[in-house]
Length: 153
Image (cartoon, rainbow, N blue to C red; front, side, top):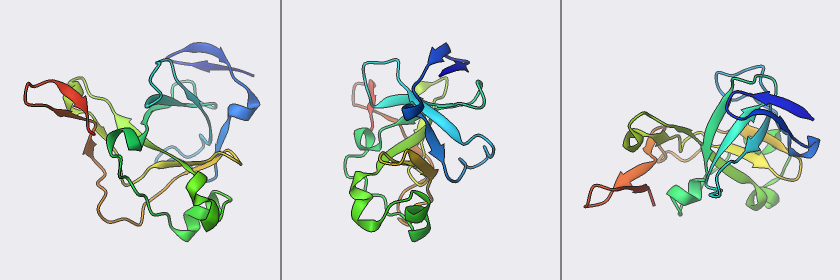
């Protein structure tokens, strides 16, 4: 299948690569089919590209690259929306939506509302975690004592 994207132009994808959101990403109702694209050798930062809208994509980040002890708690409704059960939660894949700013050191990720993908069904949601300690805005980068930017972990 061929899709058109703003960042990558026309690309070929497989139907098996399509992720269907059973609940839309907050604020983006009507765009429920996406594919994950990666043009970097690093799998920690990727694009979540809408199939329906060539202009709509999100930068997504592996939460464990930023916060190795990230332990999201899903609601029962989230588990149902992902067509899974509590025994299969271990297999779910989590990604964070990032906001990349002109000044990279000010870029943030949303720890409270991760994208959650069931790799078996290719269903996804944007969850509202039950954990009270994860913020909506968490620095993607931190500075070391020399002033260099590093990923948050």
